[in-house]
Length: 187
Image (cartoon, rainbow, N blue to C red):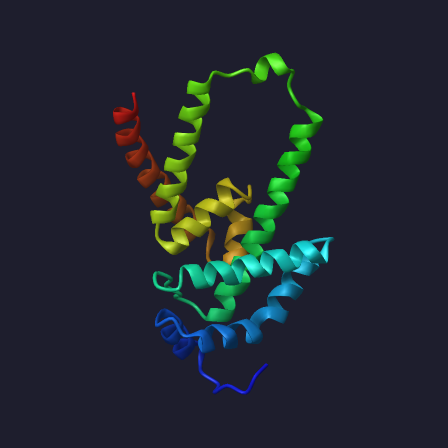
């Protein structure tokens, strides 16, 4: 790593919000090996682990202005990697299940209107989940997208199961309200 001033995590986050390349570079070099080790320990393929770590840093840079880290930067990044790993594993599992039990072509036949509606609903769901508070969004995604239980989510994020339940309730209420108004205008 090039010689750069060493900053605390709090200072790094402040500088990152001000578009500091130096802060981002320091965060990258300080945490890349740790994040890679976490991802590689759970995955069989190191290329997949590298890809996940790169996604974490890309997302950190993309969301640098809006990100709020309530715990340490190290804990946040470690939880983000675990979340991405579990999401990746769940997606791979779903793909293998889909291939094993793929329905006949007649069942898959849908109209272009059905495809358009499905796409609009998926986009709406994505938009709504992105508007959730950070912890609430993480809990929702770990539950619904990665398929983790409340106990697994609590362990991954280092929070209590009760907090997981509260965050899920909060997320589902917001989704229900948002979809109710969306579906009213949609149909």
